[in-house]
Length: 84
Length: 199
Image (tube, rainbow over the protein chains, first blue to last red):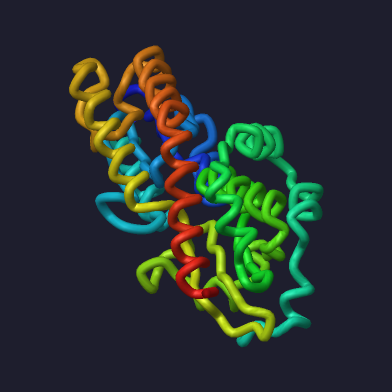
């Protein structure tokens, strides 16, 4: 890794019952990357949001991409930032 | 899966539903207090020729349930003509599958109205379209008045935390400001539905 550890932000609709998917993704990232991440930030929001960004780059949006992300796809995006 | 009296009675009464809630009971009870029912609305429900059985699909985390189920609860309480049974969406998928929003979304609340023989008379899902439209318009107005909030469809995680907090406060204020309109629209739509089909 050449840069700073990446930061992952998960914005989820807190009025939509998306907590399980949010926690599942956060857990998967914690177990996979540990201290190689600088932070995992969980942002409660509304309006059906479920968005994931890595270092400010949007890698999944429910509105844009539909549905919840494949956690493996998110891990792949994080790996790309780790090796950037 | 058809709904008959035996299945209906498996649902929770409104009081039992509230008693088993694990969160947001304070918001539900605040909304109950805030609903203003006009005498003519109460009279319309009291004037139903016979009581209706109402299946409700709900979950305690859902914002639209928190907002709209208390309206139905008050109508039932004030009129004495709506017999509610609440089913938790995620434990009753057979019921949910019958009332998907646009045939694919598990939107709640769902209110399904039945006569005394459990013939379905009609159903209502999530929130009035007029409320969605008004709030979308107000939301666009908030973003237009506050360039620091960025574009309405941009990811909010890009905003500085203090700006995001101000946006959240503005959106909450907008929802509060439109709550009376929203409640009145829920009453109007349900009243239209039940008085049309139960006559």
